[in-house]
Image 1 (cartoon, one colour):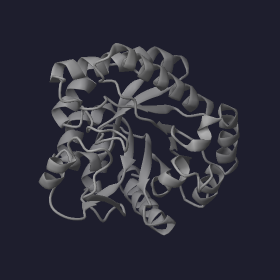
Image 2 (image 1 turned 90 degrees about the horizontal axis):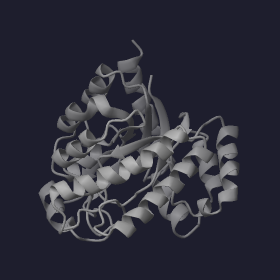
Image 3 (image 1 turned 45 degrees about the horizontal axis):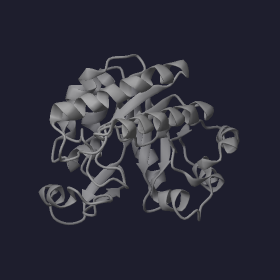
Length: 295
């Protein structure tokens, strides 16, 4: 049966930028949630001190939870080889971080969709870089998970493999027991595509999932696609919302995942309106998991 984890979506600025929240505070808040794990983020300010890594693991485990997944954003599609080599080194550092925290899964991405890149060039650069990291991950018992991603908060261009066809082409280049997909249904809407169509194409490769829901604050997906190309930051038209009340069909998603034998971690990217909202999302997902897996 899948296991639930939580991600501090509402507190990213406080934990990663201005330091107004300490990780211990987030761990204490999350300890009240009915989840088994906390998804970690490589960019938490306090993670800069390596000596604290075992301490954070202990704090989480003392609260009866684990840290199964690491969220990080390598940029493997830069045309300069020395830049890509630095990104590979960063990814290996994040793999070490995941290992120190007791985690099993560490995210990879393709990189930015730079205008000068052709499709085949970008896929090759990303695939080569990911494959360069796999032996390092395998030695540490870590599985690299590629997410169908929209855009890192600090990137200028959207994800190179944002579009379904590109993502599937990239995933199909890499076959290894220490590599799989982290499926995020909400991100597919940002490509103007159908998350269920994508899931149908990659469900046999899914090992982890991000659970979230999104709704448009204004305009349409088409408006979003036009204005976000080449703008630093995240989409302004789109908002995270309570799971079960947005655009995603969780019955169809879980039915497909169950049919493929999925039993991995599902990390909740939600709670932007507070812990009460996050608790409601946990309840919704637990109910749906029971419906499809507790048979």
